[in-house]
Image 1 (cartoon, rainbow, N blue to C red):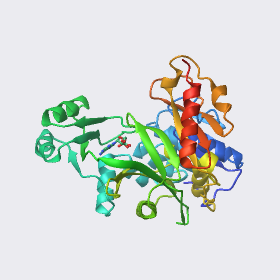
Image 2: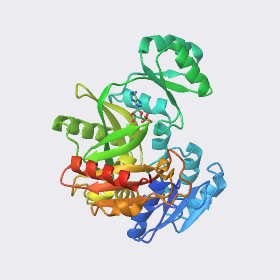
Image 3: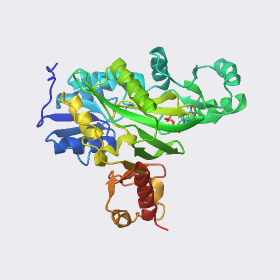
Length: 381
Ligand code: AMP
């Protein structure tokens, strides 16, 4: 086994497992600071591959290929958490892997993640594991309105069903192939927010101002920061994020998504041990972006300032926007405080994240108005 360096300086090579837009924005930050980037996924001409020095197109299950990939880089990181545990282990035999594979193992499975959170005293929505039909019959009547979610490989509201009765729950569980699932109480939340935290290789932590997030059909639509929430809520959300970063011993970025109840209580909804969609506005609004922080952290470098220079809002650009042809980008760029980010994806399928717009303004509300106006302008009639 190669002796892994603890600090990885510019000029070295970073390996990214996964090849989507998160890897792309990470690779842009890494290339800007003089690193080389290799990416590994079962696809080619990917958002990350278009920026990387080398794009490896191979299955995650090909562990020999994974070891070869890891041998050629100085540190391996992830751009999405559904990389199989065996892949992370194979990479760790040959290179420094940050964050460690155990972080992925916990967070890539809803049941493990929620059990970890509740065992460590972090506030979560009431939940029950569903592995057998008897469990469904027993717990559904106790819950009232609930959401049935697959335990593994869920994101952006995929694999989720709202259920109000045992009959609906049985139908939903059948539709997901009776696989292991989690039944969760529906939270009548006042708002959704997220905190992006970063833990450096030496255990030091830095936090961004929370973002307020609006979802449509389970997919993030608009994020804005700073939020109008009471300072007690912001402090608590930040402290919960610190606690999770430390308990999980993350080296890298962690996003904690919260529900804020109508009584101003926080419940953790989900963890993402990587840069997150709700942190994209940090590229244009903060001293250091979440992607540069991921880079600094996994390379063992000092973290940058997370200070916000200007209130900002981000709006996602989904494939649906392409239904009447290529959007009119000039119409958005006519607004000088609007920034366009496109991910290099050639197929604009409905629901697919193709890019985002960020606007900065004197207040977060103004930025939201501006970014929404920019997005409506680009849509073809
Ligand atoms: P998830 O993939 O679990 O983050 O869910 C995507 C979105 O669905 C969340 O951001 C919420 O808007 C909504 N959602 C998920 N779980 C719940 C819940 N227990 N109660 C209310 N809304 C939820």
